[in-house]
Length: 380
Length: 244
Image 1 (cartoon, rainbow over the protein chains, first blue to last red):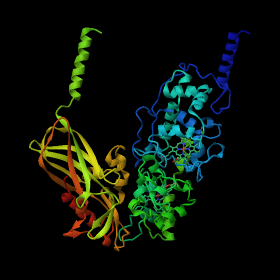
Image 2 (cartoon, rainbow over the protein chains, first blue to last red):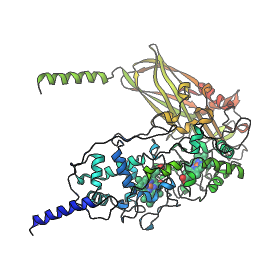
Image 3 (spheres, chains in turn blue, purple):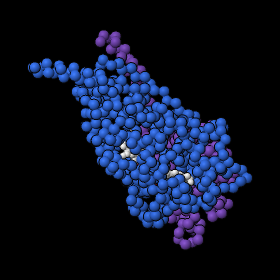
Image 4 (cartoon, protein in one colour):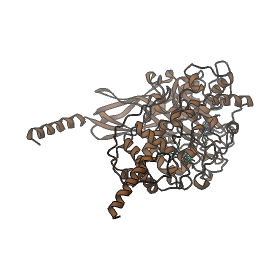
């Protein structure tokens, strides 16, 4: 057998493999990293987002319009462990749909069980982050930029982008999907830029359904329990006329309808003498401004009863502990010249009954249609 | 390319150029400086409040319908902007207004707050780069944007510890407050960029009946039916803002 016959046989074998292998077969034989894709049609079709009333418009970067093929590809990449060093961890390992895209752990586990120092974040409505940075400390400014980071984070997927690109270029079916989503001509053109764009397109579909009890109440279509209504009044400092309630102040920071203002605040979790003493400096480590130390992103409270443990380091196991924290007023910075803990953090005088009522209200934010949405589940 | 085609291309470039070229407008930098008793106000540092120690740590407000007025009439130079001393690096906030018609002006006018038509809208109606998309500046209980926020701490016991937190937020259509500032010398806008300096004297914002607001008596003002303190503060913006 001379070389060229050998080559042709190889090619035929490859084509055969390509024919039989499917997307869920990551370990399957791989193809050459550079093959032509132009025989596949490229007809990008805009994706139609459904946004319930009360939420803002979705903003898409000009260079990453959302398409049906892009979202489909992004969903596969999001759930595919092929992105991690040892093919054990996908984005979804730490962002599971049934937990509103968190992982139920105080601090997330990466490959080999390695741990970082922070708790996973819900991706519900993450596309509405607006001008605010992503992560607990705001260090990424766009979803596309954010998605570059977990791949190479040693405590998360611990891979390299060169390796990910190679795996995807050689993969029996991904290059075709990249062609459909981004119109590339050859599999060798698959790169990290396409990967993060597709993932971001998928993430922008993760929008709350508008079916939660709260949303239906907000549209006057549903009447929650009396306790939940009182909880609402406590949450938004909005006691019914002629009645009096303590102000739980939650709504100032977790304002409707996203239940976050997308700002960074210090809610007084740790007793410190100086702002330099915070072990995790949060926003301050990113901006370099000391008075930002201890400030973290205000997370959404939609689906909050599904996403324990709570806070950036998962320090509170239950929602009751969270309420005890707020009710106590938290901890201010002892050096008052640099006390950057929010003015709203003051003892509140909530009774046990008030706390139960607040929790009854938080329960109305549970969005089962969101977590059960077929389009958000593992496609493999 | 034929000569006619070249000519047409040239012509269209000239036409386009003319359409986009604006030679009768300039840029105005409006700089707000935060003062307290005539001195630069640094957030969270101790100042004297009627004999007690006070720290102001939040000072923010919307301005709307921003106009320059001169012999040639009045020009709206901007609709709504946010003056945020809380998160500004120093004691100054700089706002830029582009395409301000050339001319000579002697008054700057704006209102603190949000005009009723816009105040009937909500943050989700605006794109995230618009000041009215700030959901932290909307209060559903009032069905209104929060026009201004003034917060801080007061030493009520004379112990040297600022023990009492005060939070004064204002809002609702009735409190929309017009501020008119007479410019000393005529302010000339030409093609370049000009700076206009305004000072916000925070001590003046607390004035009431020849004295100062009794913070201890009412440290928070959230109740939509009790906007006494917020009204006083907003009224004080009329004299609290002046040429710097």
